[in-house]
Image (tube, rainbow, N blue to C red; front, side, top):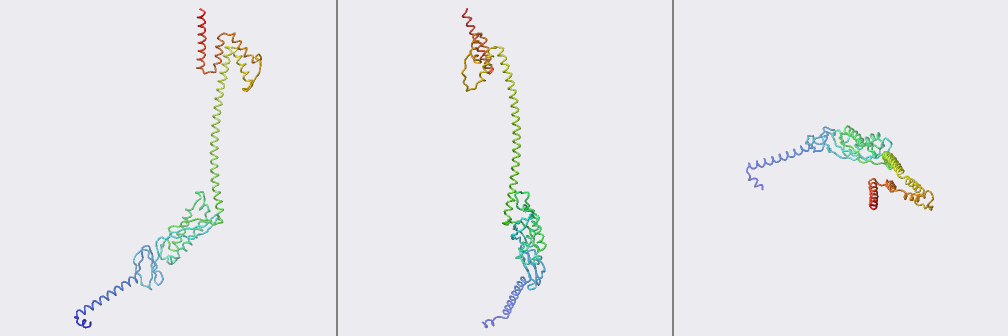
Length: 360
């Protein structure tokens, strides 16, 4: 092998030496580049923020993604925080309302790191964030609910509910304090659930029953009022109908009495005996009931009229029969009454005509 190397020309030996030097230089440059990249730069990814520390003291804060220059360790170090929006559920908090009712609330918050330098100096670690935000939510909740009654959160009357107003006040207080003290941007704080201590359940249920009874009483009162109005209107209409009916009945009765008096007058002028008979007959009809049985003699007043009137008919002429029929038929409709009377007159005329022809 040595013999072969000795046989190489001087130029070839020089070229080989140059290649080895270039390779070493290239490797040194790569090593320096890698050391320089990792030692003198830091990368902040999208959704993150960072603080550059020089000998443990903050030198700069980074809020935008990119590649930044820094001194190598141990001169400078970089602390990175998650800058994305994050969700936090608070612990359950038992607090007291303005009307001295205990209530248990649990809220949630949406937050992100807005000031990395202040966050690093005040909090220092994202593992501690929950306790800081929880403290702010508890303080704000106690402060706000102390000025509201329980009905502002739990009530059957929708006008008394103030949940949105309470949440806005708690959110404003938490947002202001977190941004000012911790460099944390809070975008929402809302009540997640509401519960009551076991000792307060009965009083709350009693209040709910009272509210419901109040609604029931209001509905019943309104229904009773409407019913009274309907009954009053019906009574008024009933009274008007009765009054109109009584007026019409009085008019009909007066007209009937006049017609009866006229009929009696006409009957009396036409046939006094028939009028007397009918009046006596009315006395008989009105003196007994429908189920009465009378045993009387035919010559006893007023029952003797039954025989007396029959005897009088035989002594009268044909005109008496016609007048009697006219009176009796006054109770028929006018059309039928007129037709029947004309028919009777026709029969009598035909009978007289036939009798005259026979005589000739």
